[in-house]
Length: 330
Image (cartoon, rainbow, N blue to C red):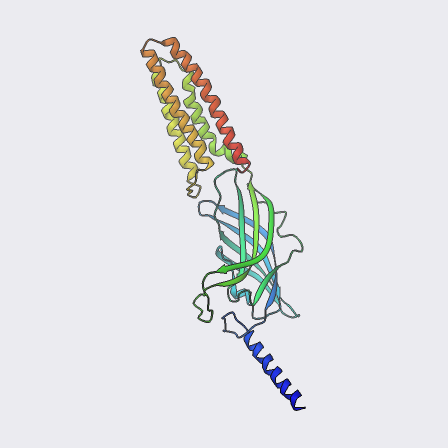
């Protein structure tokens, strides 16, 4: 009997020590220890608008809902949207009458993201949205995805864009810091994250001609000098130089609506080709003028004809090549 009592006392002591060692280890002791919980989360997008390339932002309206058991997970006050410039919460519904807590709220988020403008205006973009709890890390709560139903309103249209795919998932977000919490021995914490990606592509054909029509008209004006008699040097050089400045002006107008880019974009490529070919046209005018001054008029006429045909063919082929490459996303 004494041995049984002794064994029971030792077992109770070991169990108590184990519970103490496996308690709350998040370092957030403001409301006491909490139990680990899963948060079933879903989203329904009602609108995406105000896509601003210059400011690298867009606005997204959505309904967000969560279902969980732990009352300590106060998402109304502790929800964080990492990439958002601003978040407006409205029309909140909180139901805690059952075993689970159900939270439904309307969000309007001004999101900041980086744009890929290498193939602009034939560009594809990825809009990202994520949610975290700013108070508890993954040891206390994890997100799981509510995949029932659709995730966006099929009736709303994103003007000038097509929604190709949309995916929602959950994962972990690592921070290489302890946020000043002395109870965390290593400056590394991980938070559960609810993630959403929306892949969109631009309806670009109309926008392309709207943006680049001025450039092509300027090049054609410069190219028309090949059809002006070689003796009329003033008109030939005036058209070429005027086309050169028109292309430069068109390039600055387009770039004023785009964010700065360190890489060479399609806009840079097409304008660079136009500028290069106009410079070649000016050089051809100079060569033709020198031949005329040397008394080689027949040779000048032949050179003018060959140069004109060769330049227009090369210009069209280069434009088609780079435009098709951009449309295919290469």
